[in-house]
Length: 96
Image (cartoon, rainbow, N blue to C red; front, side, top):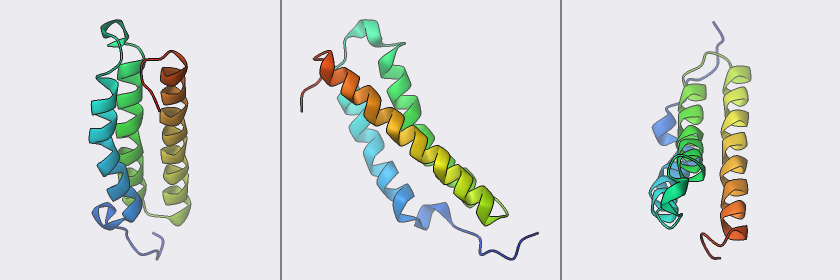
């Protein structure tokens, strides 16, 4: 086992910010059309929750390498959310 300090995900600023964004994402996706319920709306919400989940999973891992890997996955989910919101803008589901 590594001698790395364990992280409490609830104390991580990045996790707190992701937590603050989830209600905003859920509120914003309400503006998407109903026929996107199982499409983009669902994908955006799942990716948003995935940000928090990957940070928490990484914090519980034994090595810094694993922690960094999960932070990378969280970053990937964040860019997925950003991309899907851009698509929503392009399709005029939401506005700037």
